[in-house]
Length: 110
Length: 116
Picture 1 (cartoon, chains in turn green, purple):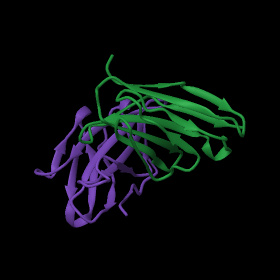
Picture 2 (cartoon, rainbow over the protein chains, first blue to last red; picture 1 turned 45 degrees about the vertical axis):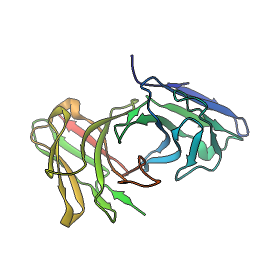
Picture 3 (cartoon, rainbow over the protein chains, first blue to last red; picture 1 turned 120 degrees about the vertical axis):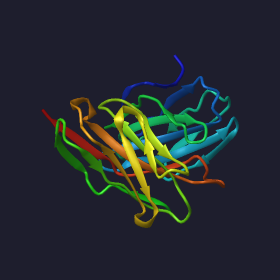
Picture 4 (cartoon, rainbow over the protein chains, first blue to last red; picture 1 turned 180 degrees about the vertical axis):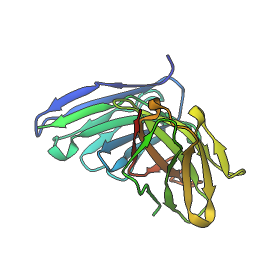
């Protein structure tokens, strides 16, 4: 099935731990994005990529890192997890604003 | 900087009633405008989009939206709501070109509850 696949779906982290949220798309899209969603706040852009090897910061990049070694994969790395990173994370890919969203990763930092 | 405001955090309607969800944007140039819907525990699904041309756009699931430049608005409407329309709805604006092309700014979302 074509689309955006995110793993894991749920995760609980302890403060100070690190983890990588995986995102893979099979639509050959150049543009990929990571958003976080907090209640009543809408979605905020963390990082985005316009192609393999090219990434840039979004609105709320602090505490996160990304890489884009292939067109298909766009992992998001959390270093030294903090309670403020408790959120739902969505990966998306698209062409000309035709976004396809993944189903999300719900992360809790305790 | 561009921004999107959805004034209504939560709206409740009866099944069969009409619906209008409000969206106002702040943006200098002609924007790209979008409405997304999110069911509980799911990702976002595109309902409709406006790029240019006819200011009344039709989307999926019987939704439509009207772009009004003079009011900086892009309100979402549906003539008759179904119980399955209960979800959270997000308005979003995108940049036309330049280094910010492709990035969306989302509103805070409006939760729609449908009473039988």
